[in-house]
Image 1 (tube, rainbow, N blue to C red):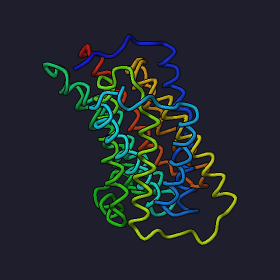
Image 2 (image 1 turned 45 degrees about the vertical axis):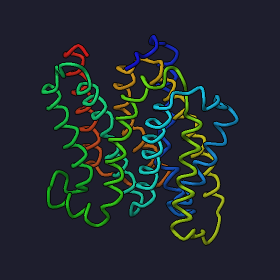
Image 3 (image 1 turned 30 degrees about the horizontal axis):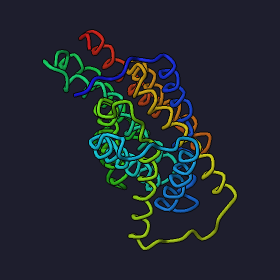
Image 4 (image 1 turned 180 degrees about the horizontal axis):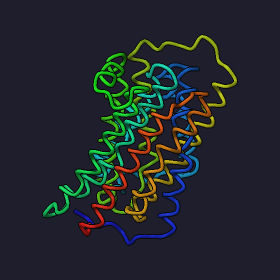
Amino acid sequence: MHSRPPVSRSATLIGLSALVIWAGYVGFIRVAADAFGPTLGAALLYTLAGAALWVTRRPRSLSTMPRRYLLIGGGLFVFYEVAVSLAIGLAHGPNQAIEVSIVNHLWPTLTVLLTVLIRPGRRGVWALVPGLVVATAGVAWVVGGERGLNPVGIIANIATNPLPYALALSGAVAWASYSVLVPPLAKGHDGITLFMCSVAVALWVLWLAGGAPSPDAVTARGVLSLIAGAAVIAAGYACWNVGIGKGNMNVLSVASYAAPVLQAAAASIILGAALSPTFWQGVALVAVGSLLCWWALRRAGR
């Protein structure tokens, strides 16, 4: 396995900016889904984002990039983006869209866990257990709705529309794998533009395979959501790719624990969704659990 390039402070700052940019991610995707449908809305968003990246970050020739990076990195990236965008779009209402986004935010905890598991000796695995339990309980608390950590309520809520939750969870696993496994394969290359365009192609294929339903009417709000959402996606992932490629992953991991709070707050404003105290308690548990995992990682000297 190839080692990462030296850590760059500027790359770390660029990576941190992605977390702020991503705050509007859930809200804009959901508005686009309401306006154009889950698959078509996502396809339009990623087409615009891919076009923006192609203009600003034109990729090098494919022949210069490591094949394993393109296949593994591209595959994980495409799967993650398709899974999460469809999860948000297929959710029943804005509140459930925000809930599935919190399920997806298990990825920081899974990133820390995977970081330990792939290192020789795996020292510190057991120290991660408290953080994993707390973060998972936080997600369950959010999904449980007003009843909080209630197994019957959680199962009932998921049973009403299980696919978005399954997609969000599988996306969390994919993104954790991308963040940990892909940077060493990249050897300094940045394929974010190619990956983003591949996501757009995959979504257009899904839309066509599903019968290509068209929206009843195009609204100004829907068009504005496409423009804003594409800007958030393109800028956010471009910055994050720089951060995980050349920045300090420990710093980025810690900062990423604020992402669910930022996204939930922004989405509640954009979508006009009222979030209960129980919801915010669950979000806090996700952040605390992730921080406990990071602290355990630091103690283990990883």
